[in-house]
Amino acid sequence: MPGFELWGEDEKKQVNEVLETGILMRYGFDAPRKGIWKSVELEKAITQTFHCKYAQLTSSGTAALTTAMAALGIGAGDEVIMPSFTFVASFEAVLSVGAIPVLVDVDKTLTLNPEAVKKAITPKTKCVMPVHMCGSMANMDALQTICKEHNLLLLEDACQSIGATYKGQALGTIGNAGTFSFDFVKTITCAEGGAVVTNDATVYNNCDGFTDHGHDHKGIDRGADLHPFLGYNFRISELHAAVGLAQINRLQSFLAIQRKNHALLKSILATIPEVSFREIPDAVGDSCTFLSWFLPNENSTKAFVAIMKEQGILAGNFYWYANNWHYINQWHHLKEVKSLYNLHEAQKEALLKLQTQNFAASNAVMSCCISTSISLLWTEEQIKDKGEKMVAAIKRALR
Ligand SMILES: *Cc1c(COP(=O)(O)O)cnc(C)c1O
Image (cartoon, rainbow, N blue to C red; front, side):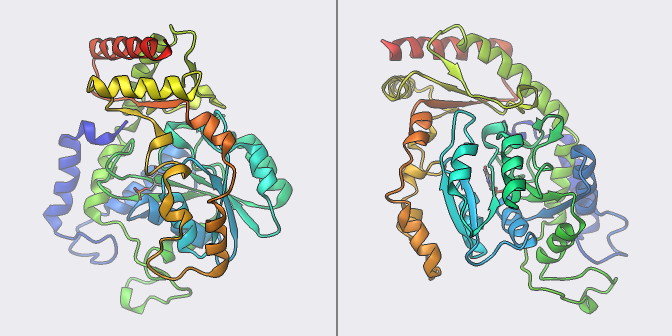
């Protein structure tokens, strides 16, 4: 999965070019930076790689989500429909703009169930936010139809699925806006960083200003810039952008390795009739950062985890159902409103309601699901060995 596995000369060269000038900030200092604009270059590379009009870099994927929400005009009291299975960053961003996360069930795609989305729509719903988890995609046709019918915004959290496509379009570029993360464990990394992508000029201009204290960036003198609206500092640095630039140039080769390794491991697990695989709305678009698969029930899945743990070979196999960071079950801080500062009443009320909301449909899927992360460094021998050990553990777990 992660780009950090293949850190090398390209990354060092890009960073060194910035270190040579000593201009570590993305804006201003035009003369001393001697033509080195890594952030601008990376934004251009993102638009070219994913065939979208605009990209705005940010300091993280979480900042990208917050920025996208602000840029789309999502704010106090607005409801954002999102899945029960995601990384905590998705709801953190919703809360950060004063909006209300409305969590709904996932299905065997491991992302939003369109029927559950429909049922959750109220007059306050402003946005539907699918999260393309573990390298693969939500059912975008169904979600787009719902958004059009109800006049809702569609914001794609594609932080885990950079390079994946749906019917030929890059994930993140299908909705009104989308986000990528370049944190250290994502498919490509900047160490820390993120991006908002969009085809909408207004949304992009909002992102451009919002991530830099509202600067309009119209002049060459930062001090004389105007501030047409409020913003924050969610800027990326030139050092981080330099790493990202080296990595995005290697993305296609990373994806090719992932797809090859994924196919081999899948063919080994597929020899067991009781194993089934994640439903993928457009299989050719899978970025293959993970192989996600199911056992027939919760008991056999838990037994598999226990057997792998006992042998010390569980690493890289994620049982999200029991994971502290990715599934509603363990988000006690959210459900108990453990906020350091006062949230507004509508937010508190919605979060407390999560304690009694029925997530049986999500539980049925997630309790039987394992995601195996696909390494870029595996040899064919290692994959076969890993696969055989997994098969043995699965067979024992099924007894
Ligand atoms: C990683 C991630 C984020 C946030 O990205 P950071 O760069 O770590 O802030 C958001 N959503 C999902 C689904 C993620 O996996």
